Picture 1: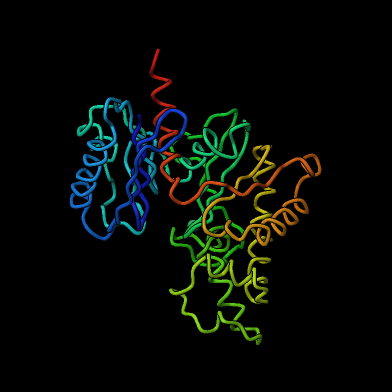
Picture 2: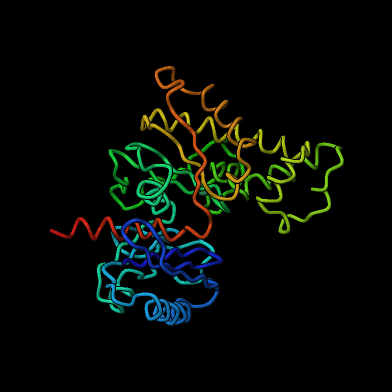
Length: 318
Ligand SMILES: [Zn+2]
């Protein structure tokens, strides 16, 4: 068994996963990212020990894989994670290694998600693809020749922070006009509030505050035919599809796999994304790059980190 740990800003998911990707026991705890890391790690250890105690039985824990925001695969640290009060460097790999004395590998959360798709999801039969996680932000993981692209500094695949509008929306990263300020749950919310201010249609969206609104609500309203929600999806998809066409020119992938909150809208997102991507694609790629919606559910988030752990374990085994 390996232990997969997915650390998110709100929840941390842990799960024991076998080689076939079957989760034999899992647990979700609140991350409480505003509290110190030392408090968090003690709570986490208690939960992991309980999980190992009740599910490991005669099997052995052979490796741990961790997915986390701003994680550096080379250093084993989370580096300046936004929305976490855990300091500039969070030593995840050394912490888990000291506790459990097994190999620990770390990847950025979206990179881990890409490995999860490669091992157990829609990317099983693909050698070249890009996963885009459309959640609070936009994360991405790139698989080339069947392997995760890590990069010189352990930070490859930050498509959320490529520029789509010069001098555009302020991004949390400090830059302006980043893709994730448009194509993410937060991005589409910003688009909705812009649309509400310049259009006059009645919409239940008018009764909601920015913080009340979430991706699922927007998707449901679009499915019910709300004009503002539909227009917001159209604009989001136009920007995302155009950027995917750029990415296709860099990587020539077989497919893009969309996951995260916004992807739950299904065809309402997919159809205009494909249309915009095809329109912007260099003609050599037209009609060749698939766009898929991930089948992974939210509670399968540990499968990516688990795939990372198995990958390192297999590489280290003779
Ligand atoms: Zn940015």
